[in-house]
Length: 347
Length: 253
Image (cartoon, rainbow over all chains, first blue to last red):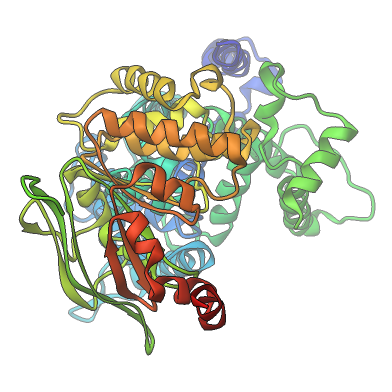
């Protein structure tokens, strides 16, 4: 209860200054007048969707999917193709992003989800990489079917306050993702998924149709990720393999869910906000500018990668239940907490 | 099986091989409605493998398993569970992140009981079952706080919550002391009294003699003997299988 209230308050505190952008611009407040803030806030919302969606298959069901970026890309290309090639209006094309992504997930999920543990992780990573390559390289009648290496340009969506519009749209997607997770964790479906995570054979002999449940969780996760991809394609206007199938996104969405707390409703969202701010900060994209000693501006994205890697190791070892564990008084961050976690996560 | 009892479970030449080894080799016996039947046999005799075959975790390499007249061989575990065959695991497999009540509720949510009930009714049913197995006071505890005997109880509670017609118990008494065995015996009798047929694997002979009217002895995957427990346990071949040839000879002399 406090958790939900806290999250709403935090969301409000974060978003309140942003929603009054026009007011801020006209008042010439320098920081808020910067369009960059909008971009960053939209990106954060996009990662809330992806991390929360990953949580459904990775956190709740316990299948470490390393290829979810494929669904982001498929969503982006579905909407992108429908707009650029079939000339559909954006809002008509958008619903097909989650549909196609979910359909693809169900198709590859049937064979993949028979694998367990590392095998599933590796196989799903393979799918994530393969789909991006396919999209770039499939030719039809001598022409690249999906724009090929030069990518796909979409007509600009004509609407006033475009930045604000896409920000709201991405926040709506994030809200849907969180609401879906909240529902899943209270439903029969969710109990089945958690039972699968905890012990798949025990779940099966109690009557859980494990195949159908796993595939459904994978498809649901893919649908939400695809929705984010669909919004991204029209927002960004240009899509290619690099910006819709980046392998870093795989690592980032998992790290966000881990950092915030897997299997929880708000954990992945909290992790997404924290981590994305850190990524933007280290990458030098935040309007708050600063110098990092001994690191040139060019090397900063590389430094960000290094710090992300270290953070991943640290989180997995020391905060396996995520930072959301500290809210609501369940645990307190202390040396003994870190020691206990270390004991739990080591053999 | 005594006359007048309808056959519920029927095993006909059930065979399961792992590589070249036949862990279960042509096992044939029947279980009648309302019976409590014990499966005994030395370690590695194929008892757990047989249970895995019945609950669908293993695919048969030969033979057939019939439930109320219809074959269930090759059926997925969840479908067999929904037909009303529940089971426990010898090495307990609780859902570690859930409370005791939630564990039992999963059984109620997905088991054989007709209709699709929501979490609310499932939790009510979980409470009834926890009362039956004596875990009511610990319903809100995390599983990690349970002792081994309590975890075994939970294993039974979860299976009973599926509302089975037949309950397969895999050594629920192993590792318990005498007092705990008595309590567990009471629990099995209480479950049986609700109209559930029980097929149980047990090493504790006191349990077999105490609750079973019939025992099936397995050795090297085959049925060595079956019948009334007292009679079966005096069978020389059974003593030999359990205690070895020399001990059997010594008993005779």
